[in-house]
Length: 57
Image (cartoon, rainbow, N blue to C red):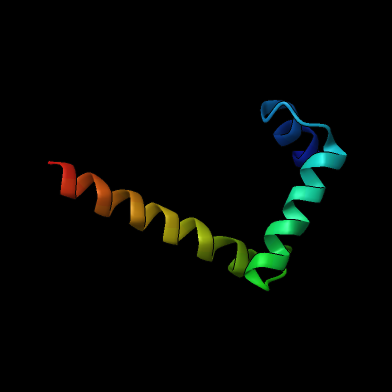
């Protein structure tokens, strides 16, 4: 169900969404089915955003 919602919000077909996720998995060398592995890129991006915001202020 989440894949359908994410695909709609991203203006992608569900198939295209999953294809892109597989590409990301290949690049990261990680299985994004694991909650811990999904959290790592999310935390890294949040930290990068915070660091960039701090540099701008």
